[in-house]
Length: 210
Image 1: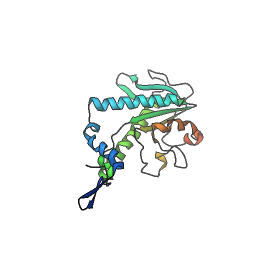
Image 2: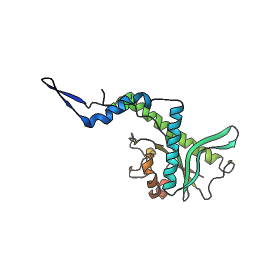
Image 3: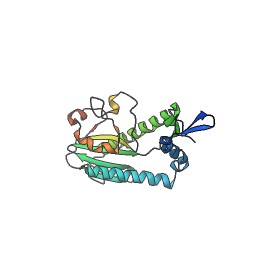
Image 4: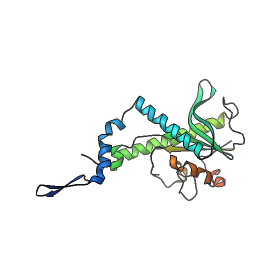
């Protein structure tokens, strides 16, 4: 039995004696659930949809004004983008790109290839959010769904189903000048977005201006 890492579950004490570490049981259970956690197709789609719904509920609970949720925005039939959740706050429009990527066993064990894969997936998610911000800027006055009134800035961020490590000490990955508020956040941090330094945020290169 494996505990998803270097931790031992059963210790051999010699003389046919063994010590069982019951605190390791949660990790053992996760190991047996591996095949279920890797299901794709309908199960994966259900997980993603459920996470988007949880994200929407968290945004509403935080008191933000939701513009759209799990919806496709079109300029023309062939020019469109799908948005997970977008809300407005003062002059800012926040694009939340939802990601519910499974945490692999290799990532748990610190396998470099697995870590690099996850970093790549999260970087792609940031790029997707930025491309959606560019889409809104380009077609801002010609969208099938009008933008909220008074919006001057668009902030693309990623919301992960897991707590993620920020792998670079770079302003591109943070929302504040002290490098304490990452652009890849968990749902539990949604309500903290209202306390950002918005004057500083408006000057960052990844923030699009209308």
